[in-house]
Amino acid sequence: MYGVGGALQWREFIKSQRLPSGFPYSDASQTGYAGVVLVGDFVGEPQAYDLSCPVEMKRDVRVSVDPDQAVARCSVCGSTYDIFRQGAPLSGKAAEKGYAMRKYRVGMKADGSRWIGN
Figure 1 (spheres, helix red, strand yellow):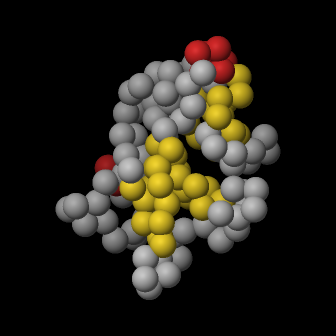
Figure 2 (cartoon, rainbow, N blue to C red):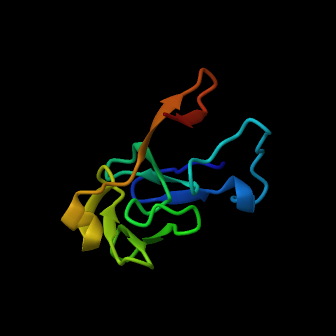
Figure 3 (cartoon, rainbow, N blue to C red):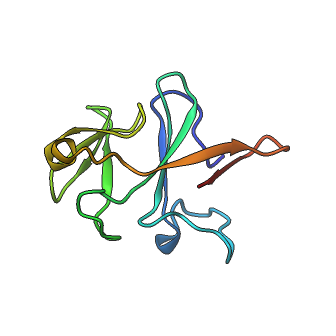
């Protein structure tokens, strides 16, 4: 219900903004530094990254998914990242400095639901 169902799909989780709407956050829930984007990579396997731009390093400067280009883009520094292939930097200051997006582990619980963590 709150995950991704296949390749090239994504969903953002930002606890401070209660996104997605209706998600059952608890007091112990965390969504990274600036939020988490959960994506289905090119074969549909879930991957998770922090939404904070690694160049800007601010909670309120988040990358956003550009579905037409299949990248995440920072509106401040202009860097782009391949979020469907390991969060690698593609252009801008991030590519110049080699700053990839912070990746989180995604695991499976016994009930079939997913967890995201370090």
